[in-house]
Image 1 (cartoon, rainbow over the protein chains, first blue to last red):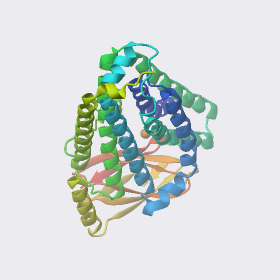
Image 2: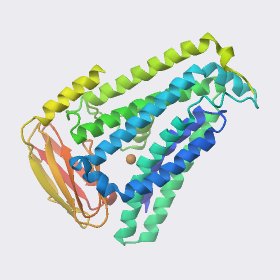
Image 3: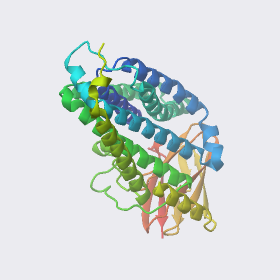
Length: 277
Length: 106
Ligand SMILES: [Cu+2]
């Protein structure tokens, strides 16, 4: 039962952290809860569909469908997170000032909220489909079903609670720091997802496979709790390849330059943009 | 952009490479057989894994980065390597107690 709980917890945590950080990053944005929870709901439904068709997905692209599917999902999430961060950078001032006065709303129409819905939905879709398949495997396996399923539910619960705790923890960060912190987190998270996508593309043979640049598994294992957390939050890999590192750095450069550019053009005429309600 | 272009070039040269070694592995009752596979050093090889159980399994490298779900009653392909000489462990994540294996690289 404990091992079931741990496996489910690991999968849920990955999705929960992404959602949590997105929620904290958009504090004070009208309707963001509705969009994100819509994305999560879509992700849950999608996870069941993906689990159902996993055989077909795996067999497509000469047996490499699963890797390509994973890479596409990850890269789409990277684009959504990049878009979100660049948008937030152009509205940084406005968001911080508005947060100080409760009741003020930000230009609700302009934030591409569907990018949040897609990003959180994809996180749930990917991790959720693994959970569904795993729990299905247990149910079909026969032995001590009930105990195992309760382990699964426990894992789901602990994962969700960890996400919630992190969320309330982040809300304690003063508003002027909150957006800075969360946009850094989202930036590094996106870089990590891009590097994972490169890993899947190598596995599929779309990109070449390489001998890792280094192996820091002895120092910090990716399977340890800290390693796992750092893997999700900043994309820690104990055995990165040169390609994975290039994907990481390229994403870092592209999103950072986008944010710097947006921040500059955003500060030129902040008054025109904040049409408070 | 340049990264992507070089990546594509690399990919083309990789697919043009000589024939890959293929190893067949089966999963039955949550056990890999053979559970010890010897592969050559510095070479990418292909594992064709047939899951004869009805339940899905996830092939996961412990000392290398490969993760792939193999649905019940299906066959999947996993590429491993290139590796330096040594012993590399893998497991079936969904049945970690019984599904264990080793790759010996020499
Ligand atoms: Cu996962």
